[in-house]
Image (cartoon, rainbow, N blue to C red):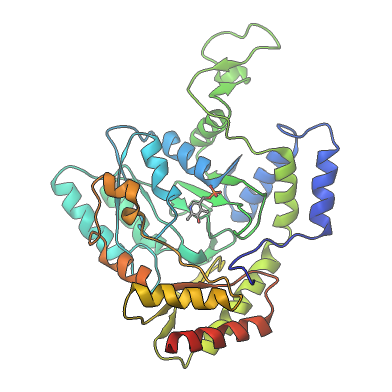
Length: 386
Ligand SMILES: *Cc1c(COP(=O)(O)O)cnc(C)c1O
């Protein structure tokens, strides 16, 4: 079976992991800050806070910005549930902004309209979480303008977008957003097994997130509210979690980071090949790419004109029967039973729902061969005709 995504590990990665595994530090050692500094510097951000998943990073990013019970947090319905769950963990209310059908990203016109209405009823969001779907950056300039105009924070869910560029800037540089979150799950661009990181240029938020990932505890006397009892002393000043990344994971992250550029080149080359092979297929449309950005191509998605959800399921089943593990990203979050219980319903975000009925994710990962891509395209074309 050809998976839709897969990690690429080499002997250098294995060596890095084994070296750390046999060192003095399995966790809370030197590899974590080294990985944080390396990725922050790669993306041109000041601070990196490594944690055990992007989900944890989103949670403590919301907390660092002060998200609480009275607040609203908005995100895209075309995402993984973690993009909105993070706000619910903080006791906040969640809402969604419909997407642009062509790109799968949050639609800035829809956002603007929703903000204008929210302002009129005094329910403006505290945070908006754009998701760089499939690795393609959202329209960050427009979002940034709206953030200034309406006064909300921006947390980028860049789980798909390590190494992607918006105009000339790496995602995570903080030019258009307050905090940026990456995921290092094995299907993502680089992996630490499980893992995530939050980048920011704000020292206070970085320190807050560092405390929150480790029980709300500090051993830095400068951050204590009472005098130290002695060299053993640590102090808990807030209610945090154990969201730490291990040194073994960070060592893997560091050696994966060395390959990031090569991974992205291969992903982009494969995506261009797919695009070319699909270019004359009526009814099969790759995601529209913006000319001013560089996608990290976490996913390769096509929209296929299908009559109904039954055909959609049949097509994906057909591909899987042929050994091609096609997938669908994403089931709109508001259609999940948990979210329906919160009051959302089918029909709330029509573009995300329409998109969901048409979307098929095809295999894309550094080890995929061009011949395999060609076979996959032929199978998709045949399956779409049935
Ligand atoms: C993978 C993913 C997450 C969660 O990442 P974890 O590291 O598995 O917690 C969050 N948001 C999006 C958009 C993702 O794709």
